[in-house]
Image 1 (cartoon, rainbow, N blue to C red):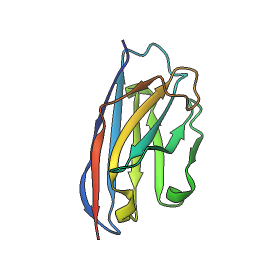
Image 2: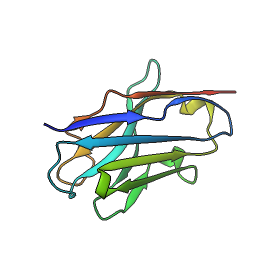
Image 3: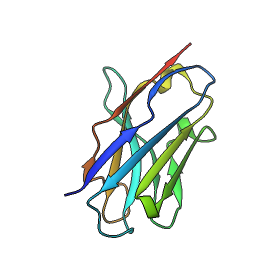
Length: 118
């Protein structure tokens, strides 16, 4: 059974940085894609970033040039380095995994809160 556990959320000031991690267990190969979605209070879930098994990543426009997604296949872990944070980045961030490699996430973690103060 695939399980995802996020860590690294917390409180940051605008302009600051945070680094999220998501460790996957119960996965048998490295051909999966992993990424992040977020949900702000009163809003729906929003795609943030995704990384394929090859290491290629892509982002929603609002985080380009600020966020960097990476992965460690040996540890089945994906990271999201968030820089130049803005108050509008405040949300619960969920890690997702798609066994096919794309961003149609079949599995999600429980989420980690990120709060950015102005």
